[in-house]
Length: 226
Image (cartoon, rainbow, N blue to C red; front, side, top):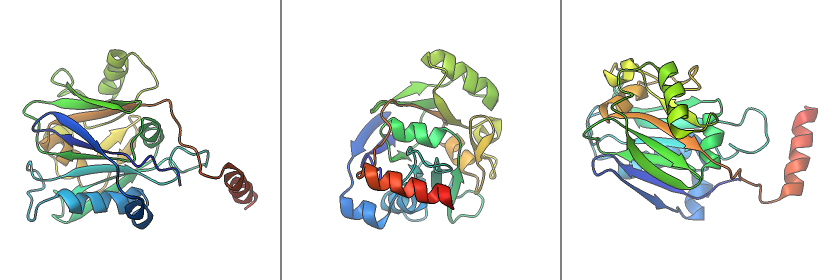
């Protein structure tokens, strides 16, 4: 696997970001994606948390193969208590955002609390910070994609974000990236809106490497021959 072993914990209420490294046995049992996202959610969320309240927890986790040179493996799972069903909700997206999140140094990001004002997370090359997003609140996703790339000075920044539906806590709102890729199930965009988290912007220059490069190349050859 190509795990970085790094989980970012973002406390939106306090405005702080911390990192943890989970033990190898946890990663072997919950190897990225939906498994890791659900594990991290259940570790952090209190019983009977309001899906649109500050106690809900939002997790974004990439798959174990994301970032490697395998077609179709750029995947990210978002997970929280769903405002649509009240149960655990998870939803996957593709596009370039998952691979860029992995290249930036994260296997998962865990959001807790609720920001007092709109913010976005800027994660780049192993560093993370919360930035004000009042100037982005109320704007549609295409505008935010353009404005954040200008603000951050890099057209290759990838952005997962919400539009007005998420901001207004529509219970089936999606999380969008690349403007047209979506975590579209279970209303997780509304969870971002309730947390006043407008966007997550990622950029990284360190792609993951397989532990055994030769076996990895052999695997790719077999997959291409199918």
